[in-house]
Length: 250
Ligand code: PGA
Image: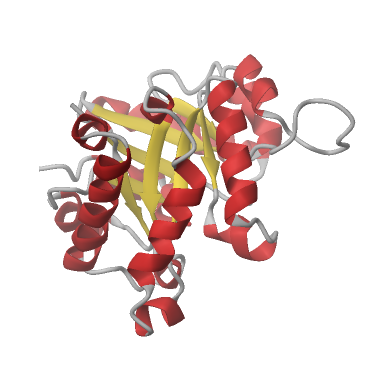
């Protein structure tokens, strides 16, 4: 059985004090979270060590990790370092990393392998630009991201992978994919995983939707057969909205 997951991607937001307040507010609301929903918080790097003992009952995620082994790479943050702090998840291949920091599918694949080898669970992000959807090449584009990013892994390593489908035109724009558009892509992703690995692997892989997911649309999105939760940006900065999204499973 695959997990239902809601992950908050705080991106480059919040001072340390603001982040501590957000965690405290979420702790107050935690009693209302459904027991079977896994909740993860992707905080900025400098806060992770301090938060490892504060997130109790939730999971702590980083927003990126290095494609290189530990050593002479000034400024890099390596998955082994994250794991040693008690961080258990990392977001890799977010569209903002791909576009603003030129991360290619190949670099993303290296990061995934290294994070998996360090024992982290990976939120593997994929998704097309608006122009790809308009040109009707969005399935090809996402398939290529998945093939290059994940298909060198073995099936055991896939247990550490959560896929997040985030159409770039929906991220931070207020424009959400319709539940039909999300379901259609999630079903395609699951079929590619089944073909490459196995039906069981596809059935057990959680596929999250991300892109302007909020309390008003989460219920309909999460009700889709192949949508197993969400990767939430803007709405995860409000404890009330994030909690409402966590409560949005049927
Ligand atoms: P958004 O961001 O919810 O603000 O659209 C989602 C994401 O980038 O993960």
